Every structure is written in C-alpha cells, then in structure tokens.
Amino acid sequence: MKLAVRNLKAEIQSSQILRGIGIEVGDNELVCLVGRNGAGKTTTLRTIMGFQRAAAGTIEVDGRSIVGMPTERIAQLGIGFSPEESEVFGDLTVAQNIELPTWTRSTARSAEERIAFAYEVFPKLRGYAARGGAQLSGGERKMLSIARALALDAALLLLDEPFEGLSPAIIPDIGDSIHRIVQTGRSVLQAESNLHHVPSFAARLYVIERGEIIFVGTPTAAHKDPSVMRVLGGAV
Image (cartoon, rainbow, N blue to C red; front, top):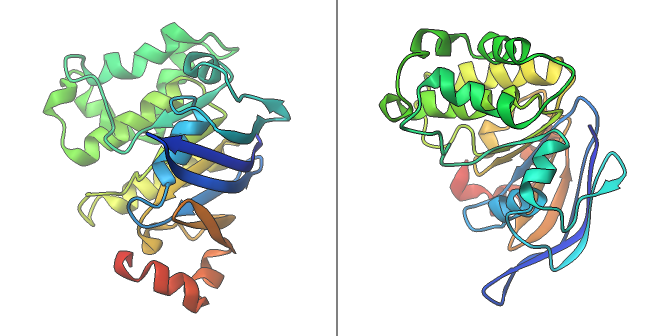
C-alpha cells in the first residue's frame, strides 16, 4: 500500500505543529520519520489516522484521499496504528486483544489466518495468550499492540516509537518482527526519536524538526550529515 503525504499542516490549540510536511511510503517499504520529542512525529501519524484534523495538505492512500475521513473508515481501508503508549486493553487477554480487530474488519483472509499470522510474527505472545493485557511488560505490550494491528489485516502500519523505553535485550526481537512484516508485502511508517533505532533495512528516512522535514535520505546518509547529527545529537 502506498502512502503520499503532501504539504500537510496541522494545528493544536491554535499552535501550528506541522508546517507543510511531505512523506512518501511505497509498496513493501519501511520508511522512518525521525525527530526529537515534540518535533511533530506523533501528530503526523495521528493526522494520517484521522485523530487529528489536517489544517491543509493532502493524504492519499493508493491514490485515494483520506483527508476528513473518520478514523474507523481509515482503519477499514487497511491502515493499522500502534501508538507510542501501546494502548492495549488491560482487562482483555492477549488472545482477546489480537482477536478484536477481526470482528471490526472483514477481509479475504479468515480471522483464524490473521490471528495465526500475528502469532507467527510475534511467537512470544503465544505463551501469554491467556494473560491479561495489564499483566504484560512494556516490551510485551509493544508486541501486542503491533500484533493487534496485524490482525486487522493491515497493508500499511503506522508504528509510533516501537522501541521507546524498551530494554536493549528486546529491541532486536521487535526489529526482526518489523522486518518480517515488510517481507510479507506490507508497508510501514515508523516514527523514532533515536536515529540508532532506525533499522538498516529502512528504504529511507525523513528527519522532522519543529514540524518541518529537514532531511530525506538513507540511514547511512543521515549518519554522515552534520546538520542531522546536530538536530538529533541529544537522541543518539
């Protein structure tokens, strides 16, 4: 699934947060949006998902405008969202959290196939299937949040800081799972505050600062760019 964001602007309480940003994600691509806390990463993802109203600009998915669509309709198109705080349902089990999206969106794949795929990507969750969401560690909640988006049968996933606050030991596992998601033909837009968390297989990254895109290029080029390293110096 292709995503094209052009000249996107957004305001929160009369303060301009996004100042005409542009981002493109192609089929089967991982693209990262990198910036310091408060740079506009979460607002970008929330605006794409319809949680935040766009003040100007266009957002197209496979050439179709989604500006002004309600969030539930955007999800129905096959766009999954894993927020920074995970937001899993604490009073539901892991199995119930994963099963929930299969009730809300019908696709050519059966619910059983979609659930099985979520567990395939995150095999550790199988052992926690009967555990309540509130009983999970931070890393386990991150896994569950992404697995739940997969069970929607999403073709495009928006991942907000999937590595934030996690122990170094669990980051490779989640990174491998994201790689697996891309290998199966899905597209991913991943927000990150730490340049070192950008996976090596990312097609490109966008650096955002004060609501503006200041760099577009490969992870290797970003590490060699002095202006990028100055902006992200506190996050690397």
